[in-house]
Amino acid sequence: MQNNRTKELGTAPIGQLLVKYAVPAVVAMTAQSLYNMVDRVFIGHIPDVGTLSLGGLAVTFPVMNLSAAFGAMVGVGSSTLISIKLGQKDYHGAERVLGNLVSLNVIIGVLVGVLGLVFIDPLLTFFGASENTLQYAHDYMYVILLGNVVTHLYLGLNSALRSTGHPHVAMWATIATVIVNAVLDPLFIFAFGMGIKGAAYATVLAQLFALVFVTSVLSRKHDLIHLHRGIYGLRMQIVKGILGIGLSPFCMQLCACLVVILINKGLTRHGGDLAIAAFGIVNSITFLFIMVVMGICQGMQPIAGYNFGAGLSDRMNEVLRKAIVLGTVTMCCSFVLCEFFPHYPVKLFTDDPDLTAHTISGMRIIVCMSPIVGFQIVTGNFFQSIGMAKRSIFLSVSRQLVFLVPFLLIFPEMWGTDGVWISIAAADGVAAITSAVMLWHFYYTQPGRRVPSIRKESVLRRVFFHNRVTP
Image (cartoon, rainbow, N blue to C red; front, side, top):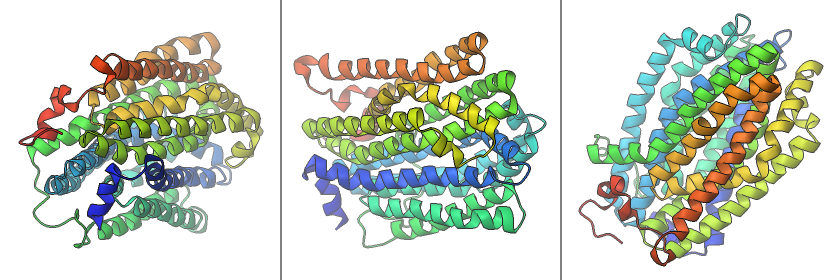
């Protein structure tokens, strides 16, 4: 049965496949966004300290990004490699990748969690926590780091579900975390009087619940690819393949840490804790739409990866075109909502008039480039989906480091808090132009205008075609 599910990636109509794989991923990613927003909505309404708690929560973003960077490196790298192996009919190899995903997530999850706990206060202070917000940030992040292994395993195995032909199961697992988190949040925060620490406990317990469910699905013996003894031993060739492909999202998350440090410092200097809290709200709202686009990309990933591995370039090109259209429409919706009706989403997080004004002002500036951001996200993920890590890494790093960092160093000195918001919008615009140039180069500079073979990506050639005949 699972064999038929993977074979359809190379035979079924692309539009039908993209709907089948993208809709569950979009629902799952939207649910994940809501999952992150739930904490902020409840925390923002804690009596007397809601605004400061939101500021403390915003400071944890870079620490969580740093942890997520390692998880994304393993999860995305493994799921992409599994898709390509399935396209090559290398089912044993795909199963080995699944086992190595589990082992790597346990090892890295423990190391990152322990190091984070040891240096938690210096990290939070470095990332922008003030005397007023440090305690709130510490309380939340301490619990999150205790459950770091759970988070890594849940996200990694959920990605593997989509690559092994279970997109709907991955969707329901994510929705389950939202429901459990939404139920536990008010219980722990208000009924038990745990405040922001209660939100963190709710988050970890919701992920633990989903991890048990996901593990049970991937352990079913009748599935072609499943968890079992003998696949968990780390193999250097597989580890290199996972980390090589996953280096792009790792770099993106790592750069995000640096960027948030600069954003927090710029906002603290020019707007104080109120501006930091405003950034946390803006991030939550805009992130919802970005996660929808990421869901579209996740639906595209197994289709593009399979057809690239099978040498079916026309089908790969078609799924890219359709994903770009869907991503652009999504981000245009973000532009309309945040530019013309910003009060409605902001009201969910706070009733404070000063914080509301700061948030709306910043959000309107940030989303001015939203209509072209969808194209930029899809393009970067496309290169990652077909295993061309160099191109994906370049697009990820250039947006964060080459464009955004210089803007953050210059614009706030000229326009204060508005300069921080302008920096983010300007970087998005330049990154989208760069993505267009890279995509044009990919298609139109090759002899006969044919898509280049993965064999030209020498770094990954040994991983994908070791002892095999290339398609």
